[in-house]
Image (tube, helix red, strand yellow):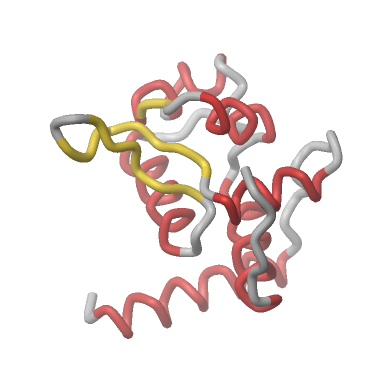
Length: 129
């Protein structure tokens, strides 16, 4: 992926969302080369695959993935028939992966979790949810 310049606030928000997501570096690395389906990421399978730090329900996993789409870390994979249930990494997500320098995704602080929650509320208000 090519180097792209992102606004510092976008990088900060995306980094915080990633730290709060419960997903692993292994998932991000996998998403660089192949799309991964929601069902492979959710539940016990996602945990066994090394994609999550703990087993999560299908709906919780999807909500976390959709938030990462909103902040620009991920995108839905598209095939010849349209959008699929698989996800891929974006250039912003790839930049965050590179910044980790082979380290695991750091845990989120209480402040990170609060700000991430607040940002989700603000985005929902803007979009009329």
